Length: 445
Image (spheres, rainbow, N blue to C red):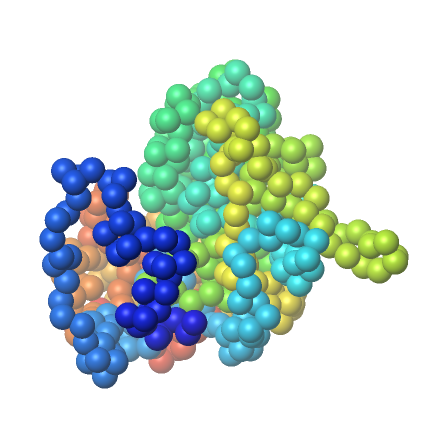
């Protein structure tokens, strides 16, 4: 029956007769009366299609999107350009299938997309193997920490740099405290990880060392130092990365990292008011059997034709439950599909151009915003597409005035200890005119 056509009285009568029930009340006889609501639900009166459409449009109209404002806000969710073909291909009917291939042998299209996604993530990160995708960047990071603990056996602590995204650290805290794993924060120094202090916090009980590069403040760190420190104590080195910075930075794989994770929203996915997003997860082949989620592989069928299979899948939660390495058994299929289309379309040259534009525009932004001397950079460090800017007025007040001028300002760093600090982001979408308008508006403020 069509989903928009309700059941008639005759339909309901026929269904009740087919199961031998006298009326609707007979369906609920096993529920004790004292726990039943015993009244009608307090719902509004039904509305016509026209009324519902008007109500939804009024509600949606309260949101202000990046179509209405020039966006300089980043901090983990980025206003990158999404080519039209990504929307066109990802909305094709053949991709609107079951969310996960529980019968993988009949899901060849889905498996091929996942296989291509894994391959490109592995190439981008310089790692040996990648999985089918995770829920989002922060949970991928938490899974990486738990994977390090599982690999370290009796090791029960994770050391994480203070320059990792604060929301990622919160997710880590939520995951690890229920696993009796200590989360140790290594302080930052002038906008980057204090590697001297980090080295004193890593010991024989450390399962993994986590740094972000470029870090939350946009600073490009010498992350290889964390690899040396971690491996010196036989701990795993974990890197949380921006995938669009990788085309112009040395790959985490070449730097020697064991696990690489990140947020893939910027790879062909819109901001979408916060989600759904996409976590990616890659590691060395040595750790593949402790990797969460699923891994697709390429093979041949009985006729010798190219075919795809689920090579590995972490379904151990069915038998081990809370003792399992991970309970993740799904992946963000549609969002990963969009990223696969984006990476295929852009290619190595296109993604490198995006990275170079982000780099050039953010440095131009830093130059014009600090030219008058009213604003200064919080940290004198190399940066990719974001930097922390400090002025003499509270960021909340400044951002309110920017919105009035049609500009979405930066992330307020005040709660993180950077007084009047704002984390501004410059993607390839920002034009010279928009950056100059931001500078002139801030001058007036």
